[in-house]
Each structure stands twice: as C-alpha cells, then as structure tokens.
Length: 239
Image (cartoon, rainbow, N blue to C red; front, top):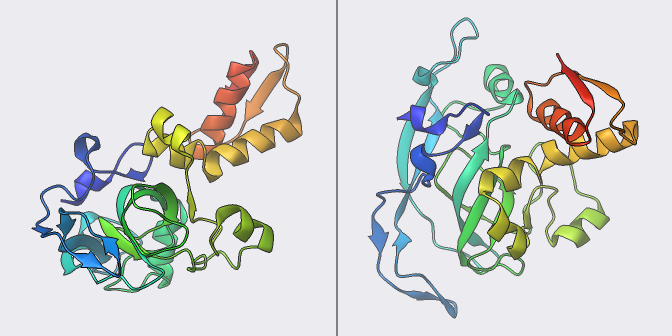
C-alpha cells in the first residue's frame, strides 16, 4: 500500500515509524569472503516502480506498483543497506513526467537515511547509519565507489571528507545517531538544514530586534530558516 510511504513533510517512511522491511522472509546464517552475514538476512526486498504514465500531469497511486525481488549477493566493495527514511522532493514528479524516471524503474536520485546490514566496503561498516541516494525500496546494494546520480561529480575535497565518490553518501557520527532520529539526521543535518543555516548566517547576524521575512516557509528549507530566526528571538513573517 503506497499510502504507507507518504507523510506530511514529503518523506517516505513506513507507518508507525517502522522500517519498510517489516515482515520480509529471512535467510539463514552464512559467510561471504570472510565477512559474517547476520542470521536475519532478508532474501528479498520490496521496490516501488513507476508503472503507469501520468494522465493530464496528475500523479496518483495508480502510477506506482510494488514488486518483490531477490537481494543480490554482495561483491567486493559493496554493502547492503536497509532504508530507514527517504526523501520525495519537488522534482520527483517532474522527472517522472519528463521521462527521466523510466517506466518500470524506480527513482534512484532521492536521498535517504539507511542502516548498513552487511558490508564488503572500505568505508561503510555493518551497523553504520548513513546518508545515501536510494530508490523507492526497502533494501539496496550500494558502494562508496558509486558516484552521485543526477548531481555531477563530487570534488576531491568532498571525496576526502565523505570517504566516498558521492556528495550524498557518508556515515553519520555515532553520537548524532544516538541523539536524533533518521528523519532529523536527513532533514536538519542534510541539505535542507545546512542550506537554511548558512543562508541565515549570510543574512545575519540575527538579532532579537530584527524582523525577518522568509519566503517558502511551507518548504523544507524555509521552515527551518524560520525556526532558526525564531530561536534567535526575531519577529518572523513567513509567506
């Protein structure tokens, strides 16, 4: 049911805060290349695909179909992740309408928060909570060697900081994982929060006597920018 994948903030998340993988069958314990695989390794994963073209540019649940596929064996340099939460942003529908997201495929340009279940990767270790690009699916095989999808190449500095070849793929610090939920990690400490923070700093410094007008306060960046100004004691008007 695709309704379990929508929320008020536009974030794909399973109902009740559970992961999308609830109820999947599990495989027995086995070893691979010296890496111990967890006893509860899912054999299959669920993936939502773009199944039917939009009519009159209207997006409904009819456009989506859930499939269940076998999880591929890990190769050296890869890891298996379980998606905790995934962002559905403004250009998702536009990519579907323009044909950039093909019929029968999922959209891999989304960014999300995930847990590493198994790893043969140099950067991602089992148990890590990471930021990554992910499709509309419960599990995915990724690599620190993967480049960003739809965003060009990462700079050498970004590669060094992230330990990956992508702007989007990196490990959250354990102390952050203990303090905040996956949705906060992805939103507040992701592109929306950092854009709002540095944007407000560029316009600042903010003082309690300031009147601050924020455009697009219903969006992820504007909502956070308004809250930052309020926290500084400013009078905030959103539109």
